[in-house]
Image (cartoon, rainbow, N blue to C red; front, side, top):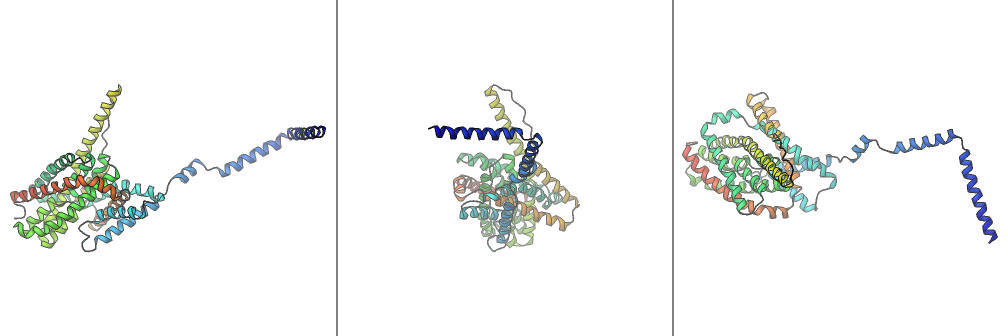
Length: 395
């Protein structure tokens, strides 16, 4: 017992001696030690800028994946039987197939996919304005403009109303209606940000419109001999009622250059309807959101603030690029190159949207809007046939 007490006393004396030695250490040596420790810590600590760069995900994997799918969609569209779908819709379907077969998307590609489906998609809409010559629309005469305006003004509310009656989501119904009435997947992509639609809604609407357009393109080519329409009149009917530009071209090409030229002219006039339609729909959506926010503030006892109506820069950019092309500022070869780039960027955006949707989601969301779009397309075809006869387009 006494031995243990002695050992404890010796240990206490040694630790006290160590503490007294540390206390006797010169102040300069202790300061140098602390400074050296701070320098070593700083060397391994990233700066704020370095930390942000380290945390920021790279866009390259996702951009590469969407570009690969867009290029594959374009090449697939060159094959017989696939061209009627168009590269935009093929990019969506390839994105959906990639997600389905591989069970998801790599986490490293998420940032680039999101960038493609938002920023690149809108930039593509801007560049797509280089395809539109406003002078051709004016030269087409009031008959073409009137038919296209009637189609857009009647088809959008009808398909929306019918889809609502069938129980479809409001935003999905409106996207499908705009794609049916104006210019297919490009219209869906342009209207989607105005409605703050989810990526899956945009992808499902674009794919639905494309499938409907493909069905009707085949039906048009089979019905043409029975319609008793001159080639130019048939081209006007196809251009004013079919969904995508690719659909109008595919339906008109077998019946001669006159039918093809008229189909392109009438269809591009419908594409021009995208600008006023997007502006009006965006204004309506933001006013509706403002009223809902005001009602929530009033129920909570707060004051209703004013909601600023944001200008859709990509639609205004589309119109500006159309003006540039109309004025002939850009050489034709450069304008063609910009149009090609526009379709590539839009296809990358569509591939990004497809990567966010699986086939189960398409089956769950697409059934009701497909039925509404089908009935709306039948109405549009019948109305268009009557208006072409009434206005005497194409003889």
